Image 1 (spheres, rainbow, N blue to C red):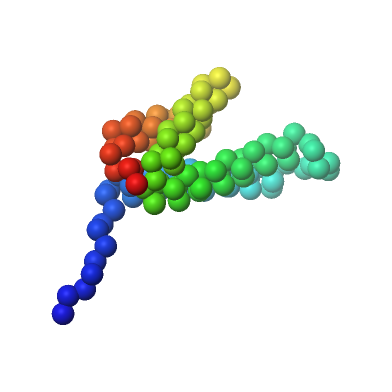
Image 2: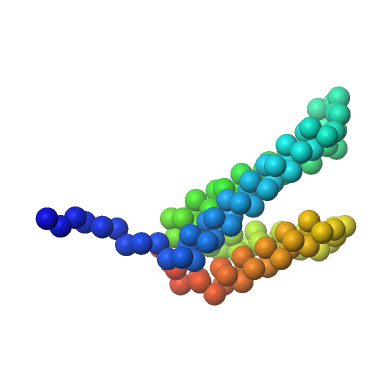
Length: 122
């Protein structure tokens, strides 16, 4: 009895998706931390706007992770561009320890996407 098996996803795909998902979790945790530590009384306060951007960033990262999981070339391009934008935005802001760590993850993930682009050709 033989069973039809799907081809396994390359480790690069797993790593990219896992990294994007972990980055999304980071942004959700950061937004939750701001929610707990700040006392905002107005809807359009700076804290609420920052939290909205953090949650939007997490959502975008999860969408990109889904596209990379499907190994779509369009999502590879979008992910590469998004990592580039994150790198630029991280460098042009006040840089602290968390920013440096996030920058290193973005650079490493961008480099990994470039090196493994052949896996995202569907």
